Amino acid sequence: MSNLVLENEASVAGEIISVISAGVILAPPTNLSLEISVPNLGGRFRLELTDLDDSEVENGRVVVKAAVDSISRMVVTLFGDSNSEGFHTNRVSIGFETDDKTAESDYRKATLRAALSLATQTRLVTPGLSLDLWFRLNESLRDISEMLKVRQTMYRLMVIERATGRQFKVPSLIVGEDMEAISFLYHAITERSFGWPFEEVLTVSYKASRDLATMLEHAAQSPDFTYPFSHHKSLFGVEIPLGEIAMTIVDKHIQDFEQVLEELKKDDGHMVAVRVRSRIGLAHYGVPNAPRLPAKIWNNDLQMLINMEGQLDATLVARYNDLAAASLAGLNESERAEITARPEIGEAFSIEDTRTERA
Image (cartoon, rainbow, N blue to C red):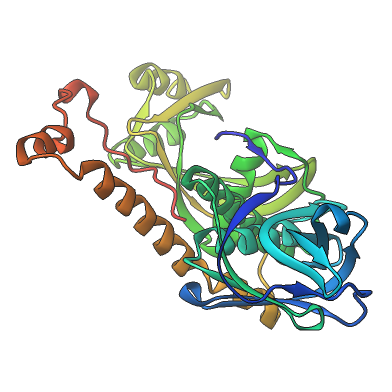
């Protein structure tokens, strides 16, 4: 699996659609809030204002900060003109900053930013500052896709944290081994029985005996090979015990089967290595003793963010479909057929992917 890089995002410019009240009363942000609504996604966010920086107001810039949670803030930069009546906004940009990296904090930020980026329009209101406007962020589809990948990874980490009772410090770079561990642990906790890629060779050593030779002959008649063992996963250097696991290698192949049988039939107790692989690169794991989630997992605030999953994904897909349709606009039927035709790549390149990970 690939690495995942988590960084403080740069500010993104927003296009103001309409202004109901653009004036900003420069006052301390005590007991004030930033209210954000995203109608097409059904999202509503109310963030407490933590800072209002008007040091550059004469240069047409005011910065408002609001708490996403205890360690992260949304940074709204207002650009406009200052006069005796206050500061009048005509442009806006959105960014985020954080003091630390945790799964829940990064999940909240990724959800909020993805919602703002996918919104057809967003309303931003700060009642105590007389600011009320509609805007749209100019974010690329590629960047939005990356945000949703981060969001999914942080959600899985939160699930692991709730089940294990641990809180992980999230590194800026999540390496491939940890990404694989996050995915494996998530499936173990939420499904307890699941398919998983298996490209390596399983080596099991047995003492040579006629009984084991007979058992192996019977096992060879089955298309699969099941091996129980005690297992754990390492995540960010922390060992997560999973207890007894039953791993079933699907569509097995036992290397040098006849030779292995001959060695076992010697019945002299010497160790015989049995090597098994999957012809299709797939194993099935049964993990009945994986950590379990508590009855009450999320508070209402987090549950609201989690419930936006389907709308965020559907809106991103619709954006890509619109982009594809736009790229075909103006072409005649033969040109469209040529571009959209499925390429003939030959049987040698045909792959049936049975290892697709469910989102």
